[in-house]
Length: 337
Length: 262
Image 1 (cartoon, rainbow over the protein chains, first blue to last red):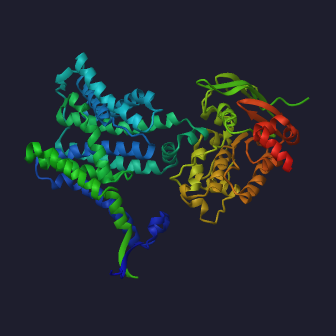
Image 2: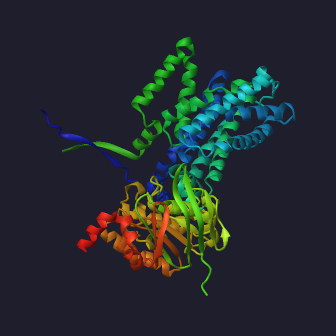
Image 3: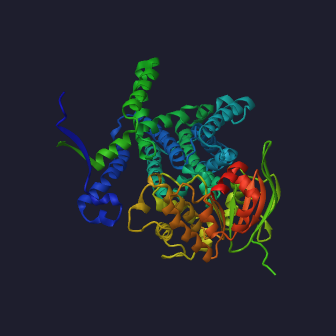
């Protein structure tokens, strides 16, 4: 039997920027190393509307961003607070209906209705989820899964808020470019804002709630309060997505409570890399357009879609972003043994 | 004339379904003392701590702190008053580095109020303060230990981390639930002076222990629990001389055995 003569070793790049101290400012090379990935993300997202030729694909970009809000919200709640929420559809629905009502009943312009619906909707979601906050793990997941079903059936049965027809005659964004750049801008804000938040002391407390909520209680802090704040932040992103969605479609209906909004973000998180925040956004950038391109296959679409998903889970189970980060920060070489 | 007790436990009963975990337990805790609690497994020692700190709701009875009832208050409110606890099964934040564990208690309202930490500002940088506290309790600042992921630390350090979490809150009372268990003799030997120093700093302690020799060295008074009831209390010598304690602890036959070898 042949004995292996060499092996591959993996070495951290000897660049000081990873100590996240001020060494990063010592040379252009190190500065570049640090900013390049961020720059790529920002520039890439901002350039997307220019690179996309048709109205159709520009619409896809907006939908990608809306799913990205939800994926960010899921990743934040699940991996930084420990609340596995399947309530993405609920957040979208509440935010969407809220913005629709504010626009059609109160006559608020979309650019006012969206932020108002984001904050009000998040408030409503947080209040409604408050009784479930002591639950953990799969129990919280199941309860949050019930919320969108509950809301959709209530609207249908009571025939309120337009019933099954939904609310029509909602104003659209002032223009397609404003629409695109509004959602992209908010997405960038959400990504970098959340990344900053999870690294603050407050973010550490949230992580501690995930790790061990009894110890947080013993540290003289109200766990429910911290969970409520986190749910507010998470649901605000979902509501923002929903509010944008109704103004893009100029229609709000019970399909905004569809479970796609709960499930696709989870798939995107798995593909992109859980706990990285940027990963889920990348996951959406892959999954949503892939789903569009597969439309040609008609009913087989879901089959191919599932195959892509399974492929990612089997071959890249730690997620794209985790893999890419490792490749960027380390290099591999063969050594004789 | 003695000062009124810091903590009064009055007729506290706790039942879990049909199981009586605590049966009309009463005792006082005086400011500045170390009260030891011993007893066989399942005798209700940890339940007493849970009842005082609010982690379980008492079925009946009252707990008074500085003359005011804290019965039925949620754990974070009780900790906010300065009654802190350690957990028998350590509950650190395993995914964080050791010193970041202390950022969490330092974020609390009590830590902000009590303040007085070294470093700039009212509280300074919580990370710096965290390392200060860890150094205080036996983590060598210049070693890698405080910076390691908590999951990789040995039991001795985790126990210290439990205590450090209490200290970050500037506690008035610490309830130590078996802080010596699972430690080697030398680790215990280095923990005992820490406890003594806490007492000198004016902290009042309740210590649940199975390591009687070390407990008797530090404790001013000892209570013995058996089957959810307080058997007796007294000084270490009084307690160990009592026949009932020997029975409860070793079983009557084993006690005879021990006596014969003694």
